[in-house]
Image (cartoon, rainbow over all chains, first blue to last red; front, side):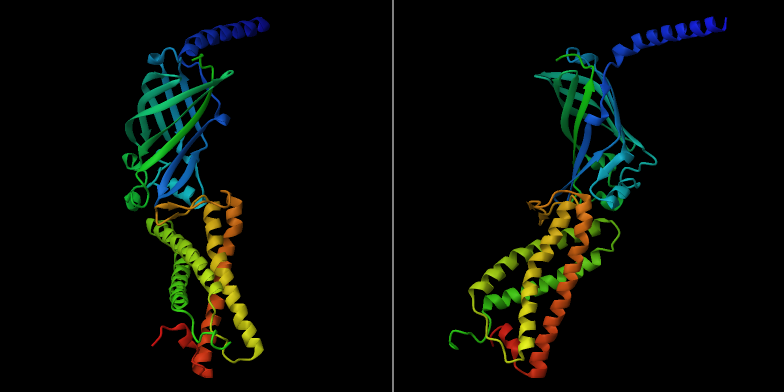
Length: 194
Length: 179
């Protein structure tokens, strides 16, 4: 009896998992390969470009290049994982005037619509939420496929003051420019062929 | 021979001497002051000013060196051979430091990931890679060499004043505008 119970438990669990997977898979079939992905940003301090990057982020992607209308792309970025050239600036970034990572640990992006431009290029419109402020952005994305993996890359510019990044005495855009360029390269598996 | 040796430095050499002297003192003082400031827009601004001053001093030091190599300085005033050697050695060390201090500072800035953009508009090339460990290794040398320059500059000033006011050989007139 004991053995039977165990077997049936395994059986039901397997069935349940298969059912769950059959619902979940079409909605979220793609996986991010974090080790091969990058999200970086460049700000300008008195004309000096300073590069930084986020070490920790995740993406939930349901995307078929042939059906962009049905695409759902969501990103979460761990703001405390931001790294910059110098340790003292990294410590500064976590403070309330900048990312305020204690109160707002994550930035998120959620797509609202995806438009195919042809040639593996797409405009992804969505909501970018950083530090409690949400803004509509349009992110140009170029897809490149090699074997089983797909690389989605692109760059866009945000205004840091839209998100109160660099508040207080740092608001002066002649010191730190308002424009911040964000660059990304996301490596995904399971994206259907272009 | 005595006719070809001038009694004073050329006007150009004199202007470069005092302008760069002033620039070095200002840049050194700014460097000392800014290094202990907490991170703020003020500190960021002063660091950039210091870098702009440093690369300007470096550029004018090339002009100064070229001028010095192509124009005859006045003859040495009479003094014991040891003092004469010390004076010439000090001048050589100062010239070497006019280049070494800004170049090492520039290298530190590049290695730390903050390339220099002169006056906020002219990006200067990085001649060392962005490397945190390298930046930490370079950093103390900018400061040490700057302090070495400060010590040699003080000795230079003390020697000039000693000649002028104790030996009364009127040495300052060689480096002062004509009357």
